[in-house]
Image 1: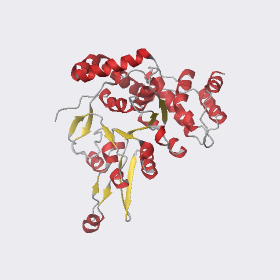
Image 2: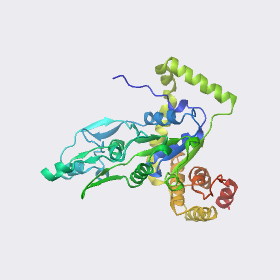
Image 3: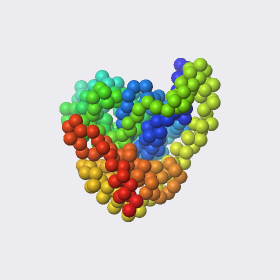
Image 4: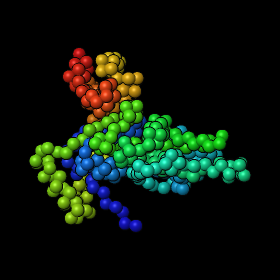
Length: 341
């Protein structure tokens, strides 16, 4: 089957916040995913599908339903772990991160997978039929129109994204498998919003609108027409930019574990979240993680005040309390004041 040629990420004009949020989540999947809110035709789906092409090939266990990393015992499924502990040689192939689509109509069983109870009773062994979460392990899980999903399914997705594990329990029988993925949701706010409790669970939230600059809109038109006229030639033309960004992501992943945050910045983050009256501690932790990832992406091993301010616009606005029918007003001046004092 002929490979689908995807529009290059580096050819997307504008939408800098959206691109930044996506790149940060690819660099650090522990950020907890990103929700992109915006009107139709603003390159939301295009950007998500272009992400996978930015990543290099990686090792995965051949035949494993979860695409386990043969060198990572801590995140392996039960079958791969048994083989690793018995020093059995695992067949290894090269694979690429994929974008796994989750349809709005998906049921809980389709998402989490199913256990064959009759088989377990008859043979005393667990028989698991993998679901979408199994396929999503080590990949990008993309949910378009996430606001139209059943709340229970969204809960399952967010729990799995946070824990990195999917657990199925049926009739006293349970089965767990790794479910570490980059969760990306897109939605059009005109079709309804997510409950605040669910909104808070997304690490980053970005609002996107169509470009208002005439020059940028013309560039969007030219790029798209050129891509549709000769896809291969257009992709080849952008390959140098793609490779530069690809290497930047790889470098950022290497730097990330080394990034440090000064105690004084932690105190400022705590003070900021109290001043903005955000609930719980998720905002504080997400803000620190995002700032560290930003620092790594810039090639730095220490978080700066500027990183914190930049991260706040992605992490805090959707977590601020608001009354019914009231619009969120994010006080960016307050952020700067507290961070720079």
